[in-house]
Length: 177
Image (cartoon, rainbow, N blue to C red):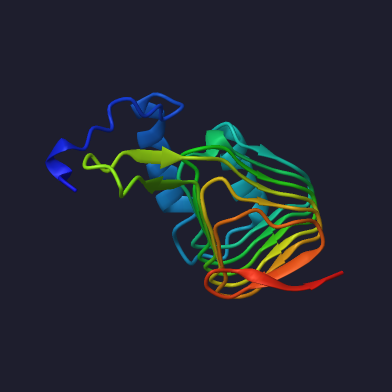
């Protein structure tokens, strides 16, 4: 690969750079710190920046959402401490989804087979009733079916069917409910 040839100019950030800069400030104050701020305050800021957020959502401290205008979640969603949501593409969480501590929802990667190391951005969808365990990685383009579970530390790079539990690196089915 030749990183001097990398060109990200065609990537659509989804909002003007001024909005993105303002979001970085808000995120630094209301999301990045360890202050025990109420979730409703974080939900308010996400909505102000274009996220679609349901009712009863709990967002803990140290949560990093890159582009809130590409994030949506249903009702009664829990997002644990230290979760990173790299929302270069749309991230959708259904109702009653739990994303545990330090999980990483990553919609972006690079085409390592191309000399130019092109950016790849694909959406992530996590259906209702699903759980992403602590320190799990969910990669670009992954869809987790309703009621699925990703065990702690799992690396999920392929779709997971409804009701299936996956774990390991790479994630493999463990059981079906």
